[in-house]
Amino acid sequence: MEICIVGGGIAGLGLAGFLEQKEEVEYTVVMRAEEWERVGWGIGLWGTGIQVVDASQQVLKPKHKCGS
Image (cartoon, rainbow, N blue to C red; front, side, top):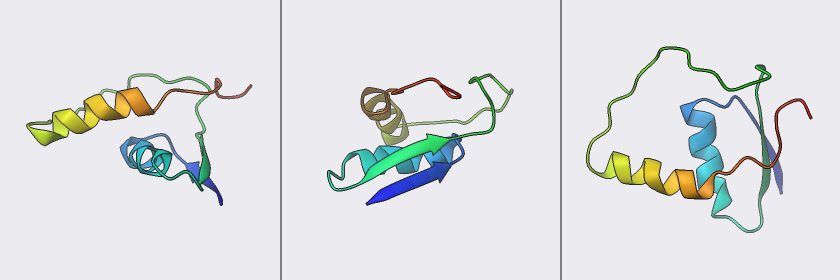
């Protein structure tokens, strides 16, 4: 199964992290911006939320730069 995730925000990347665990699913994350940039929003994390972010950093590694 191939899935296209439109949007690289917290929901899109969270879904990508979930799908990374599924061997039978291939996915691509696309977004409108050509580069990642800071937009000034924040999110507070405690306890297991921090563990999820740490785990996702190990799982979600960009395969190519947007637009290439």
